[in-house]
Amino acid sequence: MGTPQELAGIDASNINNQINEATTPNMSRTPVIGAGTEFAGTLNATLTGVKKKMVTEWRRSDKILIITGIFFINFITSLDSSATGTIQPKVLSDFNAMTRAGLIATVTYLLIVGIRPMFAKISDVFGHLQALILAMFLHTLGFVICAAAKNFSSIFGGTVISVLGQAGYGTLVAIILADILPIHLRGVVAAYVSIPNVTNYYLGVEVGQGLINRWQWVYGILAILAVFCSMPAIYSLYFLDKRAREILRTLVKDDISAKEPLFTRFLKVMMEMDVPGLVLICGGIISILAPLGMQLNIIHGWGSARVIAPLCIGVVALGFFIYYERCLATFPVLPFRLFRTRTFSCAILAAIFFYYTSNVSLFYFNPFIQVTREVSSRTAMLLQLGTTGYYVGLFFGGWAMQFSKRYRRWAWIGWALWFLGVCLMIRSRSGSSTTNAEIAIVQTILGIGSGIVIGCVGIGVQASVSVVDLPIAITLYGMVAYLGGVLGEGTSTTVWVNVLPSKLQGKMNLDVDINSAINNITYFFELPKDQRVIVQAAYVSTQKILTICGIVSMLLAGIAMIGLAPYDLSEKKNSNDSDDAADEPNLLADGTSDNSLSIGSKSKVRVVNA
Image (cartoon, rainbow, N blue to C red; front, side, top):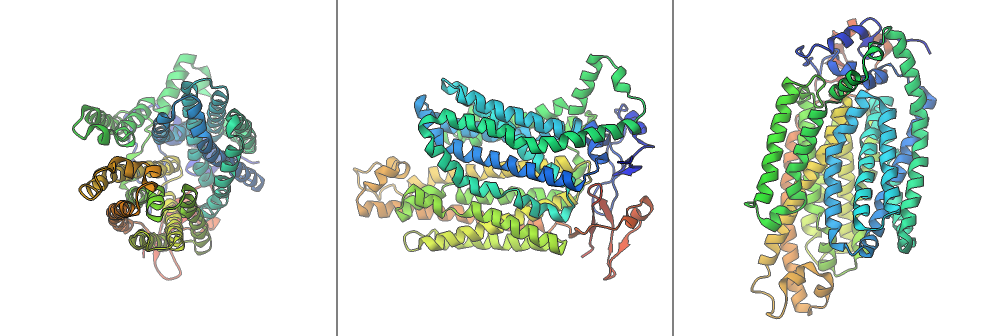
């Protein structure tokens, strides 16, 4: 393989200059990025991992192997979620710790939010290979600890460690797909490699149920599969990493870092990793979300110090993070110039409302269906077709973008389907007057719409940023899922805990325990028919409030989507890839103009003035 003379903004003549510029703390780090601009070298482009990606030439065999590897990574992570979720009640019961299930769920949820920027930064500083090996190590180690657990503390620690690895997988998969594929193919390929998320939802339940009395075997099997399922991706990335290092050695003649003392190199890595920035953003986000995720506002009230203190700490930490990143950090975790790109900012805002809608309207779906339809938990689970519909929507959106080379029109179609589904929930969740088929159809419509719009808007985010900012842009778009989710769950819990009991006050018989009637399914089914009807009416009325919150949130998401730019996702001819051509607007056949924005080594997008 020959040495490329020009690769995504870094070439043989300017790599040494960029490395020298990296040692200048006060230089400008705000190049013009966004629609109608070309990428100009930034400080982050001097990071080893970024340079490796820029000089990597992905062969067809490399792409096939890495996509196969990603498929197997999704296989193990989805099997992990469903199998461990099935055996968790038995595991906690063995250690007399059933009441701590909520603690595990909340802590792991918050860690996934906080750890994603770290893996994106590791990928930038060291490379995909090193970040993926770390994710595999943590994922496997967590399973081993759980398999050998003798108490709840070991189960808790092992679960946390494995979740760190799973968060790394989730971050890296999206980044790698963005690096190796033309932008119009990313959506459909992401859907293909997500098939295990559907199949393993059921497979994991069967595996967990079959080995529930020997649950240590489940963790042992998962530990073995975690290693084997990661091997295809690691094997492919190893040779790509080796080729990239060989190219960089030919471009950078003098390896200055090899002559530096070990401590100096350690400090350099810490600076490149931007450890203070990672600590501030991870700690700030976790501090703000923890009171809501752990429902401290419900237990102690908003005026409690246990709620106010972490919120204040989180706000201060994020405030100092902004100051540090803008004024002090040499290699910032978060390039704030991204928020000056209209499409990126609007997509992030829209995504927060998307996930808020999903959680505020679905958080209490299973108990609502069990009570109002008087069905089993299994039936309620089967009626929850939103997840399956979501992945079907990913396919529809991916195919549409692949063949039309557009994303915004399909995002609006997905938004319309999702909005329709949320509106129909007012009817489908009106109690016993509806049928199970109606509920299933509405859930499917909602899921398909959400899959289309979230997938398409995600591609819009990738189209709006440069290749250097792509990892953190993808990471931030994934993080807002948890931000919107926690806000939605907080709203749902607040309304459910406060409104539902108030609707039963003075209506139930004196011998009925209202708290048990709304919190204990077994107690509810033992109530007389007339009392169950009263509880069902209260459920329907409370759910209607949450559905209205979801409708309002979807309308706000639609307003945010107005700011999305209509990018053309077509690949451009090589003749248009020169620097001279990049400075001139390209005319489309219809007479409108567009400007080029580099997305990868061989992929460009155009901004269509529509």
